[in-house]
Image (cartoon, rainbow, N blue to C red):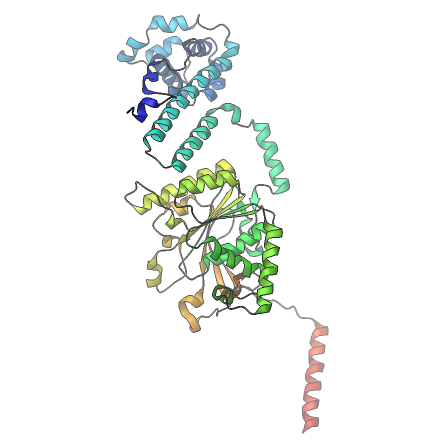
Length: 476
């Protein structure tokens, strides 16, 4: 029986004997242009991100030396480059070869075109190399399908990023920046005045982390954010790792309704009026949010999350919660989370989205006298603090102190521990767990209502007081 390996039809190992794409003429023309007109280096270098873009080892050595000479602010010419070569390098790049480069250039004014040819050949070589690796992995069943897809996507993103044609010129960047300022197109509002006034919203391409201990309402808070995002007309992808889509939808139904009880919905202990309200809210969600909200509860690892983001192209991604993301090949959880944060940062910039990542806090917080969360309480990884634009802690004092809570059952706090473009502080929110509701129209404990003196008001108060006293006397 023929083996599967013998049936491979695309790129086989034997095909690697073929010469990979390259153009020695274009490489030599690039150097000839620079030696004839040294200032051209600045135009050429955007096409040559590193020496490996050149195919020839001699070309790689020459480019490395030219870059070294330029960085030292010395003149780029054959004599200077030759003097920077080691004895071993001089055997590969002779003075005769360097001199010949001056005559290898048809026209220095076409230097960028020569450099583009060099880059194109390099990209073709990288594509061939990666294609073979992906094909070989697929034939040998070494990776899951989602992992292979992710490698393909990452390769195309990286190769595209190397092309100068993808970079915006300065005037385009300025134009896009002004448009973003005028339309606020680069920001996503929290939908709560207190947070938006504090942070100005979340920046596309940046990560916001919401953290808390179990039972403090971080998932409930994230559902409120989902509702706020949807009401802004934003596309939202919610990746549910801790809860199922069905349980998360129950929370959203209760929140959108404003009348239903989460406890009765979970127990299916509804009367006829509640059931009718449930059906009404169901239609409301379908009518208003269809096409805007996508929920996924089968994303085991980050590859599946990446595939979902690429498929649905959301404005906001809410991942609940990141400690449940499975990462293979890591010995320590800290390195897993570091990779998760860095990958989400890459996704945020690539797709211009806002990832809102839900995170657990360390249990050590429960041993402290002061239970208010701090940055050091972030579970297992300092990279969360480093990468995130905003870090918000959900702290429900009633969960800790019960009846002795100074805030009571119906108030909670959002601790803005890191706000890159704002001020760190604690914010008071109203909270109703059974209604799955966070609301910000409650006073912070440090907010004071100031009533200015008014002579007319004082006169009214005096008259009311006198009337009250007269009535008391008349009653006696």
